[in-house]
Length: 117
Length: 111
Image (cartoon, rainbow over all chains, first blue to last red; front, side, top):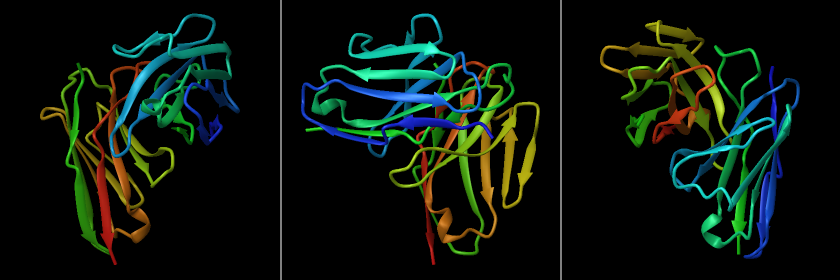
């Protein structure tokens, strides 16, 4: 079945560091990928929709200069948390839908746990 | 905007059936999903149902949809300790639209 790989699975770094998270569709092409954020004991909130070859669409309240998204190919989207601070510590999950399968659910990566000290 | 609500907690004894309920507000919801998340892990798709269906059964899982009341339920038969996790109800109004997640229901299975 379709697999979404997310890397790294866990990051611990100092405040002020920029962190890049990768989301890859391993065996299918995905023009559209999604980035979600999950705070402890809370639900997933959509941050942005990543579109291959064009600018990402950010949800209200999400700083686009803080969370840089690049979707340079049909199998890779990256989320860069710039100058990360402790309040950015969270669980980030990406998802992708295979092109041409509008009636199928999205496939999720395993998530990246980001801890900023 | 879209809103998806679930009860926060459910406790059942091993071997009993579990029923997790969900309500949503978006009348244009086309796809409704149930995801499972174990501690510290990502999301696992359990099952999904199209809005033109009333019921879907897959082994121990039964999904019921009442579109009129915008109510979705997940029944887990013969609940096992390995079923302990957080279960998220989710909806999407279109094939390429974003997925809106519920608040999650923590299922605790007592041996």
